[in-house]
Length: 332
Ligand code: ADP
Ligand code: MG
Image (cartoon, rainbow, N blue to C red):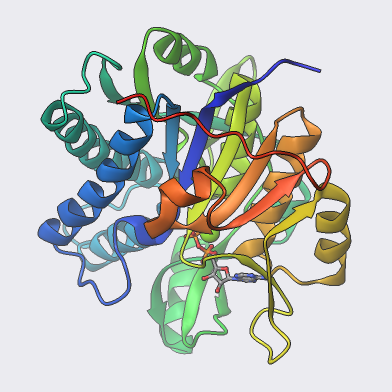
């Protein structure tokens, strides 16, 4: 097995990191939320951790889709891969500036060179079964009639969303490879904090020895695991909007888990404890990370990132119970 650096971690930020509940989505709110992340990242750097970041983009792709659809008579809409690239620039920029500023404010720019966000492609397979079963809801909510008209005109697949209204659904194929992973590795080795694989990466397929963008979205947690494994990070930290992973989530029997082995996680996964499209891929990504030689994966709340990293909050997914929690000593 690869020797993994316990201080080296990939952190996946949930969709609520930038637009949290109750936000209207103003630039001011985006900056405020970015600085909450920046504060956590600076605290990790201060303690000696080495960090790669990724982020979701569900709300932002939704916003771009709405802009494109409402202006479609004036400006031709872009494709989904291009919209994904836009969100990487949008959120990457916020993270670069806020984290850089926070590192400077705390006098930490001797520990890392700074922050760089990449426009980053992720390869999916052309024969992935997901192509025959588009399941991921994206963009605006329509009435049945509107949705059917759009489906006809744009060649979309539309379905009723359980949350109400009709929406476009797209395939969510399994990520297989991060195209720019060597660049990420070089930047990390050179002392940069890197933001990569944003929104699960820009989905591309390989064909005729080249790449082509496709109309799909990749789950950001599954894509994050591919990158973490490719980089060989020690830990994989998934930050979302719940404190812990639960068994029987959303029922009176709901039970929070402090830790589970990958065998237990697989069993619970098969028993259906983790909803597809939300907690399901987080647990699956965590299992894969540990199976691929990672030390430990964690799932916890975004507002408790530091505590999750130091095992004082969240759910640990590990090889065996009793595995000690690795903590960096505070170096500042
Ligand atoms: P993110 O944007 O962070 O990826 P998601 O909405 O995809 O967020 O996933 C987090 C959500 O998963 C939680 O808000 C919760 O409602 C849901 N969830 C589903 N099953 C579980 C479970 N077993 N334990 C905890 N949360 C769960
Ligand atoms: Mg999610």
